Image (cartoon, rainbow, N blue to C red; front, side, top):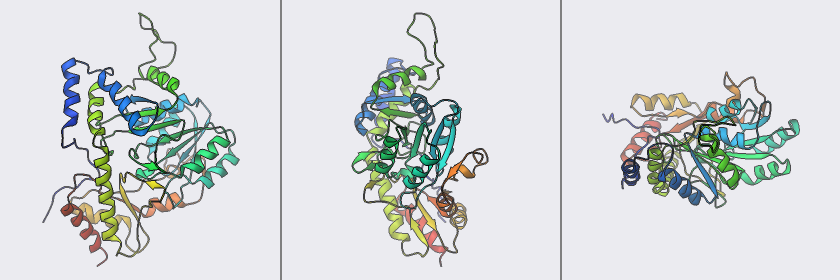
Length: 371
């Protein structure tokens, strides 16, 4: 019996070893702290990659969302619209700012924020301060409609593109449509620095302010002086070196992720009641995770337990925020789309290190449930 462990999405270095070149330079120059050539280089190279003016390398995607909210002027008591179908890291920074999240439902066409529901939320909360949109599992939200609504209501738009680096909406990188965009380089992301994030914006003045806040808001003075609240949020030079190397293989990772998705779609299409996550004609995803929904007698737990018995990792789709014990006290606008996706969804192994043998092993286990 093949008992090789297969992970959902585990990190790995590039085959070419690009990362070690930059990391070694950091050690050789003794620039290890959150300053140095790699930090500056990673910011510049990622900004150029996605086509935006400014970037700030930070300790995590959550830190990037936090400082994006702060840069957008979100303060205590302000309302922020947030998708309910997301990981808690999207919503938590709203609470860090003592603001109030209002959760917005998804639609089946994108699995992301439903612009029609968003419009309803604007009518209910005209005083909203910001909209935080997510590109779930590397699938782009329908940005034209969301951008239009935010402009109409003169509200800041922040894109949580933590899972969607390398995803395009109508030929343009996700994370670059709003006032601010964030990316994550956590260990399971399409490229990783082991941990880290990036905030991007065309507002270079705001980016400079973000870097100031992220380095403990230390004033320009000979002594240590602080006129504002600061945070220990800057990325280290070593971590940034890994990021620079990983960025060079982004396209290869997207290509392999797409191959994995198309393999599952082809091999599982013959089974009743399985539907793969939606890919639209205007959406070029990075396919970070390949996900499916089930609507028949076979349930997600059946699939996950069958894979688990064979040492293969899978997981449910994110549990919506409005169903979470901590967040259930906050308002939710929508019906039950997000809940249905959660109840019927499975995230399949999407590790770029998987072989065809691994993929065949996974689909044969799943097919076995229908026999």
